[in-house]
Amino acid sequence: MNIINGKEISASIRAEIKAEAEKMTVKPGLAVILVGSDPASQVYVRNKNKACEEVGFYSEMYTLPEETSMEELLGLIDQLNQSPQIHGILVQLPLPKHLDEEKVILAINPEKDVDAFHPVNVGKIMIGNHSFLPCTPAGVMELLSRSGIDVTGKECVVIGRSNIVGKPQAMLLLHANGTVTVCHSRTKNLTEICSRADILVSAIGKAKFVTPDMVKEGAVVIDVGINRDENGKLCGDVDFENVAPKTSFITPVPGGVGPMTITMLMKNTLTAAKNIENK
Ligand code: NAD
Picture: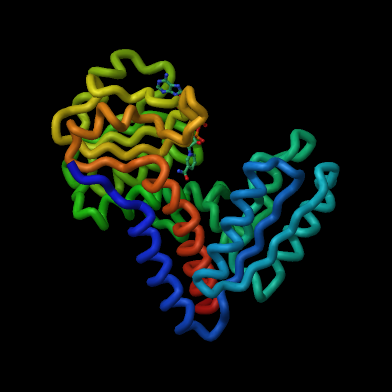
C-alpha cells in the first residue's frame, strides 16, 4: 500500500508554476471576491492569497459586506473583466442567499474563469477541448499521473455527482480512457459497484462512508471528502484505517486531494495569463 502525498506533489507543481511564471513578461494576476463573513470561506480566500504569493503571482482580494447588491457585485466583476493586470477571477461560493450565483458565474469572462464554472468552460470540458479544468478533479488527475497510475482501460467508479466534483471528475477519467461509472444517493447496489473499481473516487461528504467491503483488493482509492469525525477530527469519506491495507494507493485526509485544489487554481491562472498574453 502506498499513501499518495498530496502535500509533496502539490509543492512540486507549485515550484513548476513559479518557474513558468518567472519566465513570463507579465505577472499572472488573480482576483478573489468574498461576499460576507463565512469563516470557512475566509480561510479559503486567505489560502488562495498565500498561494499567489508563493508562486509569485499578482493578487487582488476583495472582501465585500454581506449586504452587497447584485449591481455592486456585477460592477466589480465587469471592472475585473477589463483589468489588464487580472487574468483570473474567482468568486468564492456559496454567496449570500439574495445573490444569484448563476448570474454571477455568467458575468465572469470565460477566459478569466479559473474555477471553470462558466457554462462555456463546462461545455469545453465535455467535448475535451478545455481551457481550464475544474480545480479539484484536475488535482485528482495530477495525483494519479504523478503516482504513475495509468487510467486507460481501468474500471473507475466516482461516488458523487455534483457539478464541482463528481460530474467533472467522471468526465476527466473518461477523457483519460477509463471505463467510468458514476454513483450517487439513489444508486442501488453501491457496495457491489464500488467493489468492481480499479480506481475509486469518493466525493460525498460523509465521514468514513467507504468501508473495506466496498473496495477491491489492490484498488486505488482517492478520497475527496472533507468531514469531521465523531471527535471533531478532520477526516475524509473513506474509513482510512480499515480500507488502506486493501489498496495499492490511497490518499489521506488531510494531506491528499486537499492541497491540490488551490495548486490547480494557480495552474489555471497561469494558463489564463498565457492565453490572454498570446492572443
Ligand atoms: P455535494 O453535497 O454537492 O455532493 C455530494 C454527492 O454525494 C451528491 O451527488 C450525492 O448524490 C452523493 N451522495 C450523498 N450521499 C450519498 C450516499 N449515501 N451514497 C452515494 N452517494 C451519495 O458535495 P461536493 O461539493 O461534491 O463535495 C463532496 C465532498 O468533497 C465534501 O466533503 C466536500 O467538502 C469535499 N470537497 C473537497 C474539495 C477538496 O479540495 N478536497 C473540494 C470540493 C469538495
